[in-house]
Image (cartoon, rainbow, N blue to C red; front, side, top):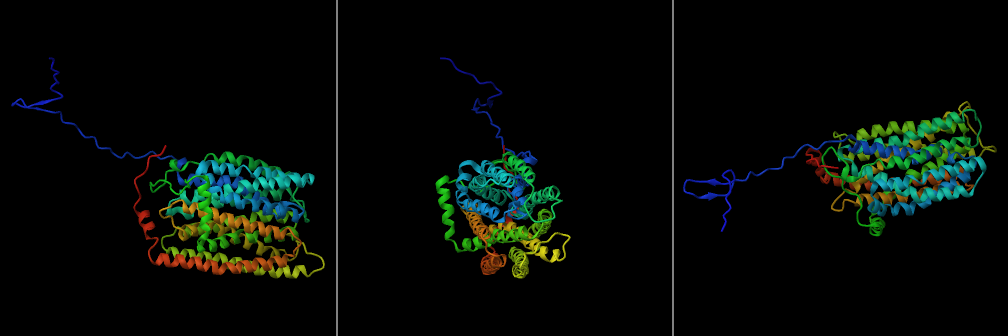
Length: 481
């Protein structure tokens, strides 16, 4: 019988010949600092999302800022926009299913792909009076835009750290709005010699077609949720993951909450008023003023965005006061601008010949300023709604609920925009459309007070205190690929 002997370095032998098993050293895992990559940071994700928004909906917004998509025929331009917005309603409702199936990166890219055909359709309509392609382009854009709209909102809302969400919203929305400024310069300088009313020159649209074509590829630069490196070290949660059909049903089911219904009206107003102001701009101002407007309006909006972002992230003021003060200021500007513009349109519609203005015409400033103020306030309020939604619907056990709520809200706003542009595609006079817009803005006052009253009570009860604690005590950084 053979006996295996263990070496003395493996065994400890005492004088009494008692053999003890070797002493094992226990290696404790040490938490090594995770190498951080700038391209995985939340700020970088906000910039990528903002650039994609710059190239896709932002490039179209530059055309929309000129009024009726820059077309000479205002009714046709508004009708095509109404078709696109109507189809965004169902595409936004199924967007959480796409997020669950493909993730935010691919969903954003798919959504961005539909803008180029619509810009190309605007070009063919302007250059060759082609009508059928304008309808097809609007359908393609509508069926994909809902995916883009919801996914970009979800990315900013769930990727961001709570104490930096205001700044991330400002980056995203400012980049989106910046496209309108750059596009405005393109519109202005390509049409600088056009001092009368009419449509943009056809070659203007080709620039925007090119920008739209780049958008899907930029969207693919986005990091997946597991790859994102937040400053607080916490992983990104809140992306829908229940499968396509179940997520779609869960999204629709969110509409049973009365707070969501109230928020739907608030979000709807963000896209209701622009149809009125853009139609007014297209009917009464020269082409070069329309181009200039697509520079001035977004410039003011960006300034307001930056001020709002820093104010909302301030720790000196309670959450409830920040939300109330910001909404109060923005809605007051919206109401005042609507009343101002309504008075103007009532006077103008009584005149035998509809007035038109160039920047060299007397009375230009008084007729043009309310459009700028209303648009800037509306655009800033739109970004503010994302911040508000995070407190009206805090992420509890079901962290994906906020994503579903964003989908319902974006669907509602698209429906209202479809109605608004549909109204402006008719022969209804501008002052009658103005009465509808003012009534809607007044109706949103009790909706806003209802939602803000809920937030006020929750904040006083300390419902958001845990968020402040989490900001002060960051979690251990997670290793990401």
